[in-house]
Length: 348
Ligand SMILES: Cc1cc2nc3c(=O)[nH]c(=O)nc-3n(C[C@H](O)[C@H](O)[C@H](O)COP(=O)(O)O)c2cc1C
Image 1 (cartoon, protein in one colour):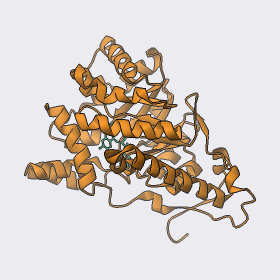
Image 2 (image 1 turned 90 degrees about the horizontal axis):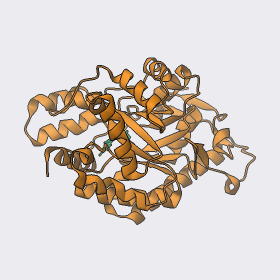
Image 3 (image 1 turned 90 degrees about the vertical axis):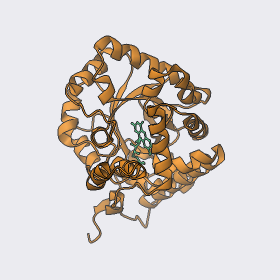
Image 4 (image 1 turned 45 degrees about the vertical axis):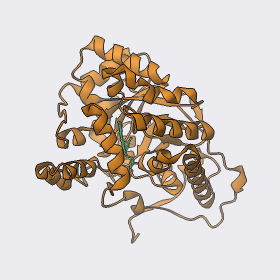
């Protein structure tokens, strides 16, 4: 196992074994107002949405997490089976490992065997910024083909890059690279943060490109500073433990990201709300705030490590919870959720 494979394995192992969540989940500050007279029937609620020209049976994306090492294949396969069963979207983790070692491609491409309505390829911005234009377009094509993807997510993860010992914290030229890719690559590009969030100012810059959506990847859920804290702890590396601890809660709360990004883009770009979504009620809250779909990573990792059935059971519970929340606010379609009443904070 090379260094990248080992790191991928450690991320999954640590995320499962340790508590790597931010200390506060901001979805707890968002409250949907109960409608005692919903005037709809629960069994008539329609959870389906259209996203990037694809029909999903629920407004859910399984966020990109893994691939690039043997156990990652199994996790991706279990997630893929559940995504196909529930007809929701799915991303894979950064495919850089497979570009460096072709043998690892199958740990991602396994998802091609499943009828998933929206598949999202993944590469880090800190990687592509180092390539020339020809390499960027060629590698983008390779990773999209690898999983037969409908869209490519470019992941912004500079918090993690700054903290992890093998990090590549170079961000110069990023927006120009994203702009080029969004104009010259023939498929939809999604810009995705991975736990530190996207603010209005950044969304404003992104809006000038030709990207097709923003996954806000906000704070409140998985903290990659926390993951790096535990990686450093295992190695007895006190210097990096300190950085991981200091930046544990760094980032923009996911609900804030949705509101800021929506405003900055005039609500014209689809927004995926990832970061701290634990269950169907959090999904409903994200949609009420204006997101088009919600992304979930950590909540699905444990069942996905186990088997297909556990992963499907978890998605069944999540969609049921979403349906209940929609019933209780009187929304019989995802579109109508945006009219539900919301309150912020505990004392309001
Ligand atoms: C083990 C693990 C590995 C991840 N790897 C990637 C990755 O390779 N690329 C990426 O864009 N995001 C990656 N993420 C971030 C997730 O897609 C997501 O944005 C983040 O975990 C926040 O969602 P959560 O709070 O539901 O976990 C990873 C998350 C986890 C838990």
